[in-house]
Image 1 (cartoon, rainbow, N blue to C red):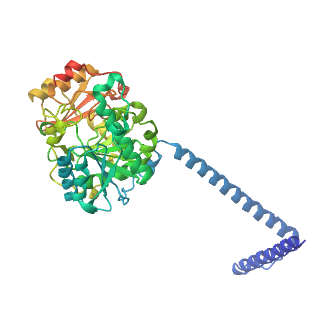
Image 2: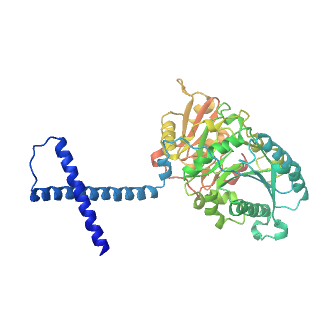
Image 3: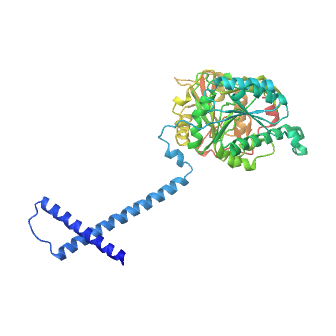
Length: 453
């Protein structure tokens, strides 16, 4: 009963206010004094109510439509990219730990840690954590030398754990030990320590002066662009004769996972961690089931390099003298945090990259090798390939890395391999970008061919 009375009082008060409002407007407009009979007032009131209800209904329809648009937008694979396309990248403020994988090389570890600490500006932004798998006691002693500058994690060693290695892979047992170590360390960093990202290095690597700036500036890209899954400091074709040593600011997207100093996120770990392989973890990441057509960021000039300790690594120094130790390490620091790196977002990068590659002069391999191409002021050229066998022939004659992993050539993006040669930028590209059907995951270069590289 009380509610009914209150409702009537509210109606009366509202009606009174409305009448007063009408009178004020009426007088202010100096409307001739005429009285509104009850029927006229009722009609006017009905029109106003109808108009108000119509507005309410239209507003509700607009809100419902906006919700539907937002729902569809959120499901779009590039939603976050599109949302942030015209916004500057925000500086990354969360800590990014550096995890150094170590086993039994104390001298190598000491040199690696010295180099990292010499270039690190903020211990809180970049905590350094050494992860050890083997039982070599000297490793911990080296870590202790650096005091609070370095943290230490010791896992039960593979030998103590007696890991199982398939009989057909006994000669590759070390790769199973490494894969186990990676799973333990990454699980500790993400699942126990709760970090949102990590930079992974190994004790046989050295780093460039702008190593930390590079990763700090590119970290927001992994957050905004879900078509990216990593940032690598390594250029597989980064030997002096195939790079522009003045292009220290130049970065690319790449479909090839290079590793050798790289950054990943907790989201990616939560995706691949539960199915982590017992061996050959890097090839596992390169498989289509994990990569899912996603890419990495890589530099023109590597921000990591291989030290002499790499010659005695797990691979037995494979390609070390001919290639790995020759990778050029950038020495001119770049303040990447002052650069606009949004051009690396897929929605900006792809169209610009393809337009550039397919608008420059198409030259033959012989023209490039003999430097007989008519430049006409140009210093960028395209060499086209029809098949992977054709690509292999081009790569071998030029001298760039010719092998593939899961069908992806090293440094390739959308099937295009970029490098620098004799003062010109060269792109080895599919003959028809619109008909390119992606990488042939079953194709592999003949073993005897690669052994001769």
